[in-house]
Amino acid sequence: MAKKIVLTGDRPTGKLHLGHYVGSLTNRVRLQEETKEYVMIADAQALTDNADNPQKIKQNVLELMLDYLAVGLDPQKTTFLVQSMLPELPELTVYFLNLVTLARLQRNPTVKNEMKQKGYGANVPAGFLTYPVSQAADILGFKADLVPVGEDQLPMIEQTNEIVDVFNRFYGPVFKHAKPLVSAIGRLPGIDGKAKMSKSLGNAIYLSDSEKIIKEQVMKMYTDPGHIHVEDKGKIEGNVVFTYLDAFDPDKTGVEALKKQYKKGGLGDVEIKKRLISVLENLIGPIREKRERLAKDPAAVMAVLERGTKKAREVTKKTLVEARAAMKIDYFS
Ligand code: TRP
Image (tube, rainbow, N blue to C red; front, side, top):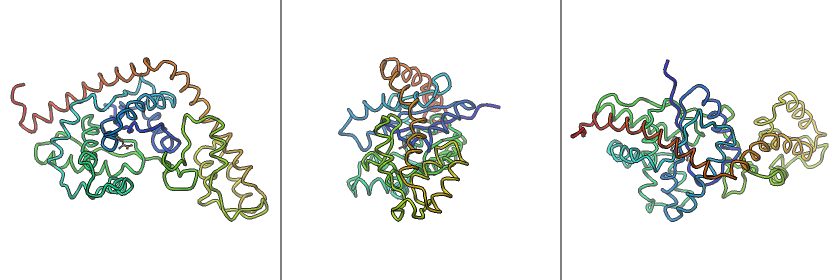
């Protein structure tokens, strides 16, 4: 049987954090063993709301590559590529835009949310409103079977599959539905208990953070505001320290015992936080060291991206030939 094709990506707007790790990086590392995996650095998509700040995007391309390689994505198994160097993707986007209505674009819940956060209103950049269509081109350009992503990306896959249906109806069976793959653990909250980790909220722990910063962030973590004295009974639900222990502590029985004790009273926040600090340092320490080693030779890291992008382009070129033939715009081949 042919290997499944996996495509996923990130906008190069910052370093990756534990939310990314839980939400999709672990899936990607696992999937590279058994599939054909492509990981895209979506620089063109990042420009849709950062058109005035290209320097930020450029700088974060390298940061993302360092994060990827440091968590164990292996260039022998995974193909890395940079979106803007594949002109077939914007070409597919132009054709796909005919298959989507403005009303549908305005209903995409993730885009709606982001627009609200950014306060765009009617002055939303057209490229931003339509980025789900460009994301459909990313996915379909590679004919991906599986797309490992965070929960917030589910509406993008849904919209992609709607485009597949219309395209195939109009032009014949060129594309197939892609399946999202979300983490079993669900979304990791920020250290303040807010639903999402983000740089602007300062509630994230990064895969590149020093031990000192990990300590500071864990000590600031939201626990149970009613748990004031060690003897007090404490709550587990909504207690970020326990949410993180559940996600990262390999000793599950140990964590269950701690939960029991915490609920009964007699276990202080500092103690559970100390345990979490050591669990996180065990995870992040080796990633940080590998990252620092790789960062000494940025040219070598960028060469990996260049090789991957060349290889990836062979795939998108082939898809475009097929799509154009189906659309009857293949005049002089
Ligand atoms: N929208 C994704 C994010 O913000 C990034 C992305 C771009 C992507 N193209 C993709 C994800 C294709 C999966 C597949 O994280």
